[in-house]
Structures are given as structure tokens and as C-alpha cells.
Image (cartoon, rainbow, N blue to C red; front, side, top):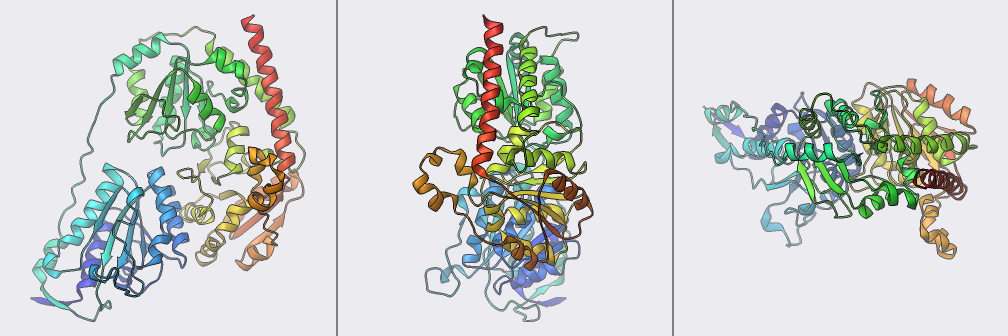
Length: 588
């Protein structure tokens, strides 16, 4: 029996059906004519939730948020031309954070490139520097009906298993695009065979390049060790394994402010929360340079830790699942492609029973950490409203456990790294620290909020908020609750903390770029509520009310970047003086 089909439609239906079978549950689509076949295929697939988003850039970042929260692949669909380029910022972020996006772009036939054809650019591997896999699907052909099925297999195999991250498939289509505009006849048996093909999950290659016996011996003979934990998509068992490893070895641990492990309910007595403060003492590196540094996940957020890492003469060991070189200093010689939890457990199993490390190394770290914590209570926790560094600590104290908190780039993530403590409640922290841009922040946070049953909060500066105003439209369309803490330091306040702040002549016009907008009107235009926060109590009260939030709620705190910088510097100087005195006492 033969069926009348549209070759474009049948290809897309097979492709989408296969993606659904392989675990794709969400797709973000920006409308366009050339993408009609793929749009119709996704829209008619009930097991895949479809988000129609006008702005391609916002769509891709929204998909990024969905993928971050669900830890599953999310598809993105766009038409041809410049729409394809709009996806690039989110793809870059997904690439560096290894987030699985299935990027589907539509195209004119190959022969129309460079011919003056409307809405036609060269899309061939356009994301080549920031993509894990690319394939051009070629024009649909009913004689090659297996091809879209196999293409879907290849995309998922790479994106989720072999080399996690964004993948790109480019679909050239010729008209007609509509389902009942038939182009071919094909045998029913051929279609049935391809629809019944079974998926074989690829066996993950086990590549053990770690000499655990040698490493364990090294750790047991060196008491001066330090563990740094950067952002990563860690499995739940890593926190327990790391806690056990650090306790057995007596190695202090620093959890980066971008890592949810910092706010885990599992307490680690070896966690040195104020490392970014006392590390500023030049005497510290002189007397407490480790022999071994183990870094899990991404590179640290803080420049002072990056500088410490660079200048350290220690043996540096990087551990992450894909063997990525997360080392801007280029000084680490050991990079192990290993699951972090497996790495910890393999070391733990080799530590002799009854091994106890009796040394002053961990004690000294705890003493210095406590000195810094005491000064933080005095100078940071008691700072008057509206000091920027206290906003993040008050936020963590006030939001409910199991909340999602997306922290924007620039100053917010740095203040989280500098000042947050262990609060004894699980907070799911998300960032776009892959490329650390300020674009797409609102959209990514809304993608996270859409698939969450617990409240979601966004801590963001005024420029990043303004940069992605289009993203707020998704909150109206899909009824997404999100509480936004808007730190308004009147544009580019981070530059007050950089050396360019000494060049006042050029600073305001070229770097600070104050918006001079009434942001309340913009928020109301998107159906949100806008509240100007007047005090710390007002702030915490509004945060507590936000757990029942049903729409966008923006809490604006207007700050002074220059005075906030002064308070930070006062705290750091006080810590350095205290640490210098302590080191002089124990070394004299």
C-alpha cells in the first residue's frame, strides 16, 4: 500500500518522533516560514511541551534554563537567515557548561547560498567553534527515510553521552511545506520499518587514566592539601563522597559561590567559607602554599583564588567528567577525565583503616577562617542598607529551602562568592558562568522556573536585567512565577571595583552607562509587580511573601557602587591585618 506524503513533513515527523523516544520533552520554537515542517512536527507531538517564543535569542536562553533544571536535552527550532545567528550566545554558554541543546535550524537549498536569495546566509556549521557535533541533514528524500531517524540517534548520542553539550542539525527544505501539499508516494512498509527501529543506548566508554594507588600514596604523605570545588553538574553522591575524602585527608575545602554544594544541608567541617578574604594576605601564600591542590569542576569565580592558584608551586590536579582544562593559569599538569564522586570513592577505598592525620594544617585554616568570619559579622552583616554585599546574604537567609536561585554575572556572583555562608538548607544555585555574559539572564531564569515546583529567585544587576527585557514576555505567556531581586547601581557598577575607576574622566560616559529609565513602567508593561525596597527588614519581608508569587515580582534595591566598594575594601583590609598578625605569631 502506498501513501501520499509531503517529503518535508514525513522527514520531520520521523525525526521528532525519534527525539521524543530518546527523552526530549521540551522544545522552544521561534516562528518562521522555512521552519514550518519541523514546527508542525513538534507542535503535533503531545509528549513534547512546546514553547513558542518570538525572540530567537530569548528562546535559546529559555531552552538553556529548561535543560539546566531538568538535566535533559531540550530542542530549539528557528528559521533561516539571521535568526540562526541569534541563537549563538546561548549555544556558547551551553558549550562551556556542557548543557545538552538540540539546535535545529532551517535553511534554503545549498545552491541558493550566495545567490542573493531572500533570508539566505551560509549556515554550514555556523557555530563550529562552540558546538559538540554538526550535521547537515540534506534535502528530504523518501528513498532515504531512515536518515532522519539515524540523525536523531547521532545527535542524542553525542549531546547526552559521548561529548555532552549543544549539537546542531541544519535542515534545508524546498517548498511546499504544508502537510497536504503532497510531493511523493511511498510504501507503508518502508515507513513502518523505520518507525519500529529500536534504540540502543551507547555504552559509555570507560577510560581509566588515573593511577589511584600512586595518587593515594601522594595524598597520604602530603598533609598540605587543598580542595577547590567549582561549578559543575554534580551528581547527588558527590557531596557525600567529597565530605568523607576531605575529612579523611584533613584537606580544607572551598566551595565556589556558584556551586550548589556550598549551600547543601550536608555540613562539612573542613569548609573554609572566607577563603577569598584571608587569601589576600601575601603572607598567607608565603607560609601556607599547599603541596597539592585538587580542583573539581570549573575554574573558580574569584580572581584572588585564580591568582593564588597561578602563583602556587603546588602539584595541581584537575578532575572532571570530560577531562576539560578548566585552568586559566595553564599551570596544571594533571587533568583526570573522571566522574568526581568516583574519583573520591576510589581514593577513600585505598586509605588504610584507622588512618588519622594529626597536623596543624587544617587547624590553622580553621582559625584563619574563623577570624575572617568574625570580622564579616562585624563589618558585613551589620552594614547599613543598601550595601551590595549584604543583599546576597540576606537573600540566602530569607528564601525557603529547596528554592532555585539564579545568580547573574558581574557583581552579584562575586558577592555570593565573597560573603555567603553555610545556611543549613539546600538551595539550588544556577549561573551562566560558561562565558559569563550578561545576555539572556532573565530568559534562562524563567526556563528554570517553568519546570520547577519550588520558588525561583533571580539576583541580577540593572544592565543585565535591561539587556534581556524581551525575556519577560515568556513569564506572561506561560504564567511563570519569578521573583527578581534587581540591584540597581545605575549601570556597570562593577567598574568601580576595577582599575579603570581611577580614570574618572572616562568612567561614567564609557563604562558606567547609567540607564536613566523608570524600570517600574517597563516591569508593569510585562504584567509584573515592581517594589522599591527601603530597608533590610522590608527586603526580607518581601522575600518571604514571594513564595506565594504567581507572576513576575521585581524587588529593586538602589545602591551606590562606590560606597559598597569602600565597605568591601574595609573588610578585606581588616582580614588581611588579622591574618598577618596570626601568621607572625605562629611563625615567630
